Length: 525
Image (cartoon, rainbow, N blue to C red):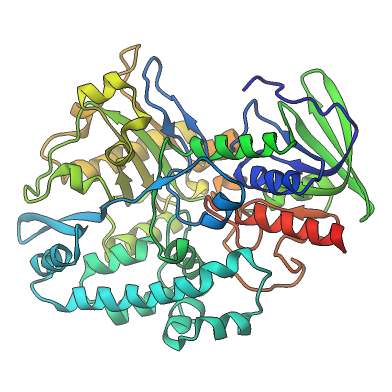
């Protein structure tokens, strides 16, 4: 898109949306389809926010999901309601976790059918117990997912209403009341299996298994309820395919998408509002009855002049790579095309995760940085140009855990380099050849690898502290001050429609949908 796509033209709209990320686009499409005049102000020269596809390597035709990369929480209802030309592809393998035991390279492959998964558990643990515990645990979270996920696009239930809907006291206790480490340790005995389960509670969340704040529980909850199944799917065409489809839906319904327009102030009296924005050519003002902010709570406070919320902090490393070929594994019983098709867990045993958290909490980089990797192009080769496909090239996406933003403050570039080296060394320990030998090179002869720290994400995407959820995830039930749909702010006609809303976080569109519903209810009332 050009730097100034869309011209606000008129001065007054029914709704002005600050931020053209996926949630803002969802809200814009719903509201425009309902006949409301909508203006989206986006600071960057393109829409999509963190859910974009880009070609990060010079002269290389690989269109990668640069930031957000998998889909689970996007309700099919939103795809249907907005008529989106977008689909996802299911991964046939859930995960592979390599480990060395008794001097032998082995691992745990989950997927490929029940019989094969059961056999993999027995091979690793020497019996049936851990697999049966796995079935019980994920049976429990599966039943919870079926009951909780549909509520995300409904008005907020109270805590007791949600508890009655869950109708499972064991599940409620395990996820809503006790640190998730209690349930993990009750169900499982094998350290590696415990670690695989715990990782979904730690994605982008700096916490221990027994953190009394239960932030890890909230993270796990959102990772196991997606789609009512907890499955994490690959966006066909890359994550940008979703936001391109959303932008098309909003634009075709009549919304004005103004890129290169940075909102700098919101003035409101609760009934009407004015949004001042800045472009390369100067300042402008757009009036609206409602303003939706598809940005962080920190950004909202800065725009309205309110007291800022507590600082947020991200805790992840994101690495994008293009390989000439997938590396061979030390565990020769597993085909690399299967091992990397799902989530490839590195240094994520239960004890390893605890040690990494303790080291990072003490201000040190983890000695064995935990991470997980997957290969988008195995499931969806359309993100690669024909020449790359013919050569057998593959992508790798790595997401590192337990690396809070504070660790990078002294020297972001130097710490990023040290962390990347240590993270790849953990992967190399399970490979039969160094990953560096498999990396493709760009048109200038440089290895096709890029790494993003929390501070990089704060700079590039205005994520507060690099936090991918904008703040700690919230329980999906009613809380003071957030209104019927979980998008309320101290200002009656200014709503939060980004990841920091209640039921925000991840690529879901849920806050955008819910903010649009709140506006339409208000206008109808």
